Image 1 (cartoon, chains in turn green, yellow):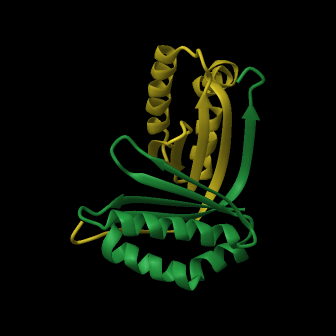
Image 2 (cartoon, one colour):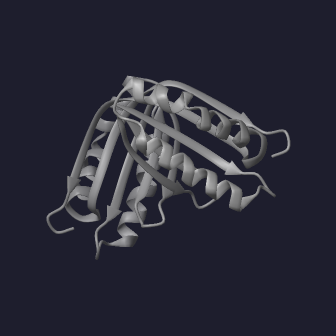
Length: 103
Length: 103
């Protein structure tokens, strides 16, 4: 299982409508990849954004990284959307999950 | 390098002041561990919280997991603070960082 963290800050003056449409499209593409597990979006109090994406296999991760539309989106991201970003590809070592009976 | 993701939702009626004090203390402890790299806190639009913690080594990760005060905080967390949580320990495979000249 692979966990991808993508932290970013949006550039001042980016085209918010174009960015939102593209982000929506990227999620649609990712969800169609066999082995896609989850996508979640977060933000910090100081405006950093974090996307957390999980893939079951290295093949799924590669398919996502190399998808032509995603490649194009990555290029646009570097050129227009983000003032900075930090991408990490991680392999899951272990995980635990708990839901409280009272929760 | 290890990346720990800790997603959680706070239980209704938890002691917010106690929780905040304990969370602050946990960060102080983590920062003192040799090999601690970073801590960041995020939230999603629907109220899920995510803490992202990085350690340089497996030894640092183990020291954090087994710290007696952290153990006690984990127990309190399960009993009182969280209605649910999801913990993942991941090993970094690769990362890239970029700051735009115009950003």
